[in-house]
Length: 225
Image (cartoon, rainbow, N blue to C red; front, side, top):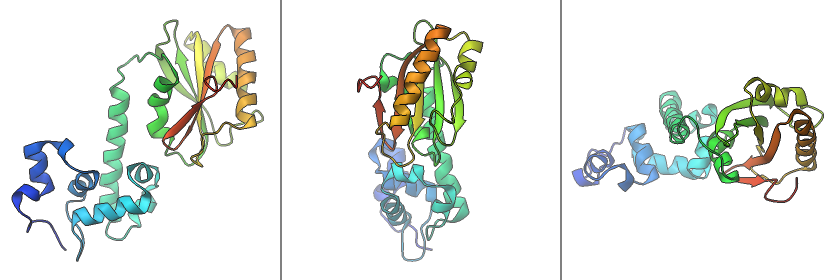
């Protein structure tokens, strides 16, 4: 096993993190700290760089399944678990940074709440962000998992939690596992159907956010609803 103990102390990732702070390290160096050791003929930093290259960067590593990460030569179960655990902590920190009751003032705020997690999902998921009279988030409720279209989605389920929690508005959000957030005809039809149902319930459908990879599209901003 080839390690970086032979490096000068001021070049080792752990020592640099301790002395200069985590922000001074590259993404590969931070992952190398998680990996602890590399493999024969390859340091932990080199292994981390190869891992990032194989999955197309940190975003691709986040989207990769556990088995895909585990299958990389030199990773295995323990290292894959450490990487996935660290990525999940990052996701939870992002959610916590918004506070208990984040306020939505635009599509960017809505997307930021769910994009990190939903961009890595391998199936389509439809969720609703429930809002109060001040556009503060009451909850995020999952409606359906699988194909998101007007044939599969029941309006009663879309509004069930909104009614239960006395929400005054909702934002639809779903993901495209392909990575392309371009809204489909079904996405537009679903949004219009939800708006019609919401008008009868006095619950406004403010927007529909489609997430694809590290991008998103607001149907409202596009003038599609």
